[in-house]
Length: 167
Length: 167
DNA sequence: ACTATATAGTGCGATGTCGCACTTTATGTC
DNA sequence: GACATAAAGTGCGACATCGCACTATATAGT
Image 1 (tube, rainbow over the protein chains, first blue to last red):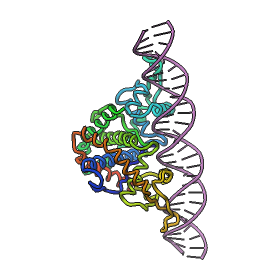
Image 2: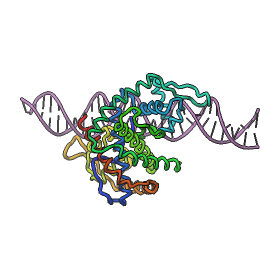
Image 3: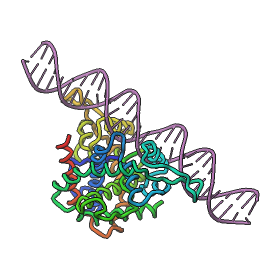
Image 4: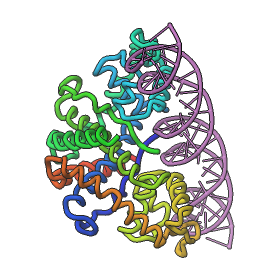
């Protein structure tokens, strides 16, 4: 299972305790994001079959949306995980019969990942299983999630660019 | 190391592909949040000494901000991790001399976690080490992070409440 | 007081993540 | 074409996370 950890949600912090306002605000934003990401993962994973992780769904979902036939390395890059991790994740998908691996005709070192019908069906069911939770969140949330999206996307793009330029 | 995985950042999705607008927007928000959380963890961990994880910093930071003397279980709850995970994390902190564990005088089953001077110094250094990255993000970010904070906090609170009411 | 149940912490085993090193194949240089 | 270097994928080992089961202690009901 996965990733977790940010600052505990239990405490609201005072600004200017140890940082200027804007750094402090950014730090808090990243904190909240870490916590939300953790809670989201837990929530979603509870709706998936036993032993199936968000990583599995994410790869299948990616292949459905952007097309299969991708190589393992392309997938690893898309998800920002080491190739060994992708190897492991893909082996789980193969074991469950949700994808098949074929040699890549363009490059004998490489492979291609293809979806099976069972794999597509798994995605449909996972999405359906998550639906009620999304509805409940929307009911309780006193704001339109769409208002958050542009800012988050911008932040993600900035972080992505930094990652590229740093390594 | 830790948590990762969301949908790959590589593709922007069309609304109404398979969900009504608001569900789709919420799903995208959670996706972006997952990716940002992952990138943030990677970034921060690169600034920490070898083998030191965000989990270590988070616990120390929590103790500095909200006061030490907490029990391991209180910490586990604050961070939403199983108690076994907290046991493991704390053992790492003890090993590095950043906290000490003492029996809890109020409850002989329990313990209390106390910061050491070295532990406080580690926190200072970690924060200092992260500073330049925060500055760089702020320079590249064409918006004030403070504008994101209220919405994220609200979303986190909703998810927190749901967790409580579900289990 | 006695007993049943709940709680705090931990050891252990299973599994996910990821760095390192290796094999196989591609690419670039001469 | 021969050779050095790079890239794709995987085996292996280290380690983090976490469920299960266990011990020790507290609490509740009688």
